[in-house]
Image 1: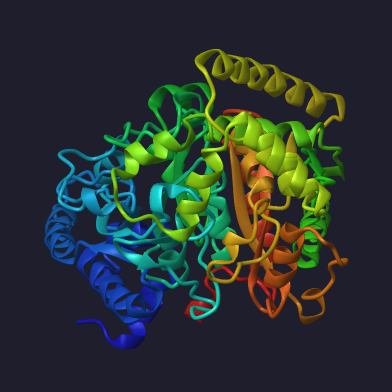
Image 2: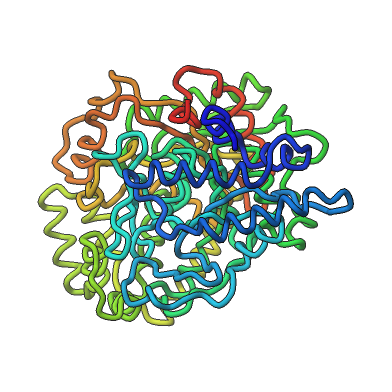
Amino acid sequence: MLAAIEKNELLRLGAAEMARGIREGRWSSQDLVEAHIERIMGVNPTLNAIAIPLFEEARRAAKEADLQAAQASAELGPLHGVPVTIKESLDVAGTPSTWGLPHRQGKLSQADDPSVARLKQAGAIIIGKSNIMQLLMGCESVNPVYGRVRNPWRPEERSSGGSSGGEAAIVAAGGSPLGLGTDVGGSIRTPAHFCGIHGLKPTPGRVPSGKPQGIVHLVPEAAMMASTGPMARRVEDLMLAMEILSTPESLKQAPIRLSGSSSIQGLRIGFYTTDGIAAPSAAIQRAVREASEALAQCGAIVKPFVLPEPEFILHQFYALMSAAGSSGIERSVNGDEMTKQLTGVHRSFSLTKGKKWIISGILRLLGQNIAGHHIVPNLGTKTEDERRELTRKREQYQQRFLQEMERQQVDVLLAPPFLTPSIQHDQSLQMSYEGSYALTFNYLGMPAGVVSTTRVRPEETSNRSRSSDKSVQAAAKADEHSSGLPVGVQVAAPPWREDLVLAVMACLEEQFKHTKEYPSGAILL
């Protein structure tokens, strides 16, 4: 039995390092699994991050993994014996995938999601499924089945983000070295930013994923923007996970690692600190500038990037996401209790054209320009013809955006991940624009990751100009008392260029991990 200090050391390791240690006999899978189970049991009463513990199953799997590792002729997978966690909405055989809906609690998945199956084939051991936002619709994580996830940095006050909030919280707190989340509008990247870890949203189609049964609140044209991807405290683990999760065809055509070397020497990187609609918090803008300077020191060619037509992206994304209207949500919910957050989404998706015109006009008159101009006019049910037109416009814009990247001579983009640091619990009820910096790359179908680099400084908590817009006021509220909270930056590249995203993230991790403000792994020290 390992001593407590040795168990704490195990918790600080990354998933790749854990797997190497098992192969070399430095520790056992049972050591790792037991250490992480104890950690989860210690922090979960506060965080509520793990919704479905799978401890006994994990213990049995770890014992079997150690028996295999003891055989000299055994071929061990790249994650052999390593504990991992999985977002609750992803199917794991023998467990429910409720999406936060009470009526789904008794429905057990018959098979693993393809992404989960790939992790198991690589030798990973699932120790639990993590808590989520109901129907995955929001930048917090709360639902009537499992309750609310809390941020490990400030549990009583701050959210862990959504919808993969439980995954980010448990990875940040040391209960898991590697997790699996999903992302259709920032659901991997927002929690990673809020909790001080790293996460990657791959190109849609890079990682295979099963179609959920009974979940119909998104039309297929919107669901196409979703991806399944990894979350971890180390970029090395994201890279290893992507090599495991990616389809063989995509790896053959577009490898995950840069050929020859991961050096970013000569890579052209464009950055922006605001989209010109609503400026992010001062700490986030600083993080982007500092990351730009660090990348230049690594030999990259760094320059400002002018984001083309940011309003168009926002309008079209909301039009697609709401295209199933309120009836889609109703069919998925099936009479169950809805959170306040989902109730608000349901109400906004039900707007008719006439009501949208009236409400958006009133909002603009009241100075609510973000909701009145950019969001409300684009919500509501769309016909098949309207959905086809939205898809056509999206495909055309994706081409225009890539052409604009080439015109401005950039290979990779560096951007804010979110409007603010971690928000207060239920603060998303007042914010309607918060996810805009992440959803850009869902709309574009580009791979994007968040790498945690710094923390909010005391002087950065009250820098916003006064505004009558409630969305801006809500962002200012989130900035208050945010000193010390983690901050990340977002890295994006053209479709199928996860290698570029990960190379830049690895460089930033290396540049910032020795600074006193570096968040990833800090709460384990």
